[in-house]
Structures are given as C-alpha cells and as structure tokens.
Image 1 (cartoon, rainbow, N blue to C red):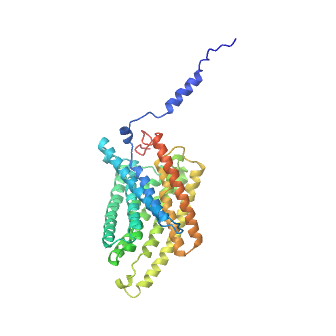
Image 2 (image 1 turned 90 degrees about the vertical axis):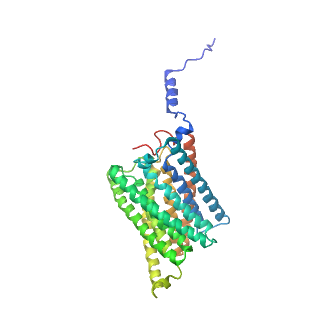
Image 3 (image 1 turned 135 degrees about the vertical axis):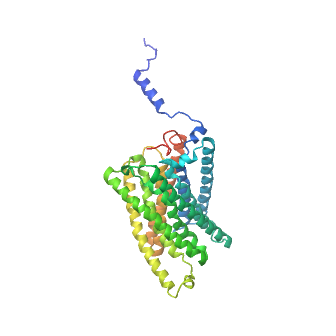
Length: 392
C-alpha cells in the first residue's frame, strides 16, 4: 500500500550541501599554516603582559591577588617564548623575514614585539624587584637604555621606509599607523615604573629620557589623530571587522598620563642634593603639573574609548582577527592611568571605578583569548587570505 522507495534528494538540497562544503576551509598542514603566522601574534603577549602589570597595581587588593598577577606574568613569558619559537620556525621553513617587515600591512605590527618587551620589563620590576639587590637595579637600567635605543631606531627607520616605499590613502587611515611610534613612547612608562628603585645618578637620566621619548611618541600619535579624525569625518567608520582596532587610539594619551605622574612621583628623595635649595619646590610643582596634564589626557582617552566602544557594539565583527587584542592592551593603559589618578587624588570613588574597569579588562581578555583559540581551530586565522600578510 505504501511505497517505501526513498524520495530522491532535490537539486536544491544538493546545491545547498555543495555550497556548505565549499564554504568550509580546506585542511592545511601545520607547515603551510605556519606561513601565515604573522607579527600580529605579539598582540597576544603584549596584552597578557599588560594584564599582569594591571593586576599587580590594583588599588583594592584581596588575598592571593599578588600570586594571581605573578601567575599571569609567568604565563606571558611562556606565551612570548611560544610566539617567538613559531616566528623563528616560520622564517626557517619559509623564509621571508625582510619581506614581512617590508609588507604594507604586516610590517606595521612588528612594533607589537617591542610592546611585549616593554610589558616584560615593567612586570620584571613589579614582581621581582622589590627585594632585589643593586645588581638587579643595574640590569634594569641596562635593559631600559637598550630598549630606548632599539625602539627609537625602529620609530625612525620604519617610518622612513613607510614614507619612501608605500603609498597609503588617507581615506583608509587606521590607528595601526600609530604602532611604529608606540614602543618608544612606552619608554616613559617603563621609566615611571623602574626609576623608583634606581639611585639618583640613574633615576634622573631615566626620567628625563622617559619624558623626552614619551613626548615624542605622543606628539607623533597626536599628529596621526588628525588624519584619523579626518578619515572618520570623510569616509565614516571602518568596516565592522576593523572596528576593534579603533581602541588603539585609547593607548597614547592613557600611557602618557600614566608615565607623567609616575615619573614625577619617582624622582629620588635626594633630588635637592643634585640641584639647589629650591629643588623640593620644583619637584612639587612638577607633580602638580603632571597630575593636571594626566587628567587632561585621561579625558581624551575616555573620548576615544567611548567612540570605539559604541562603534563595536553597534556593528560587532563577525569573524576573529588579531586586531581584537586592541580591545585589551590600550585599555590596560587607560585603567592604569585611572588607578594612578585615584591614588594621587586619594579618591575612593576613582579607585572603585578603576577596579570596575579592571574587571572589564579581565573579562575582555578571556573573551578574546577564547575567541583566539577557537579561530585557530576553525581556520579563521593562520589561513591563506585571512591574516595580516594580505594587503588591503
């Protein structure tokens, strides 16, 4: 009575199945995927290191927080060693080191390697420097000056190469253009952290260098902001996939505010012995000016943060890119600047806001980390045409 012969699949279902199969990324071996392991992976390590420093500077601590920060710092070192190993393996197997540095898009992410170094140096003092001997202070001083020399060279050479070899359209300007100047700017942040332990003969040159290079970095960033705002006014917001990168603009004013207050606070106690009898008054005036400038810059970071947050919330990206880490690292600087202002103004309200911001940064870190791991598994990154080694 009933025909048990199965109905043939319709052409529509066959087409749908074929389309689904075509949308699935082809399987590639690890060796081929490693070809697309780019410099942008250091956004992972700079964000992890920034989180470790943030945890170690919390105004409202609970038992075990110091150990948590230490664990995050050690994990950052492991991540850094892992990324460095895979980068070396990429260039050993496939070559192209100079091509990656000269690439119009991937090359702009090479400074994230130096930003990772900056967080490692800051965390090194934060977690191992309190009870260290004089040799540790000397080692930090040497690391600081080496970092300044390397990042200043980077800022000059990379921008010269960009100016002479590439042609970028201002209508497509993105905050990643700021990245080459970012590492030298963080020399001021490093100085604000490690100058506290240094003797006067070392602390004052470090603070002077930190202020100088912090000013250089912020000045170049501020000039870039004019192009960025003009691009937004003329061409509108970036595509949803690029909007997480808008948070990069939060970093320069936030880290500058943090560095200015930190460096003036860490002037040596015997500062007056190196100058005249008015040195103490001079130091007090410098501190007041630094706090005023920090509040000014903090508001600029807040404005950039709000613009980027609204843009991302209204049109969130649909697939993971390594620029998602921009939602973590610049915001650690913004939160640290808030903590610094709260401490100096002795405001319980600002400290509470900073603690809330810290929770938000931690949550965003884990969200981006899980998305990062899932993207690797699903071939959303480390795959032809999906990474920063593709020109736009």
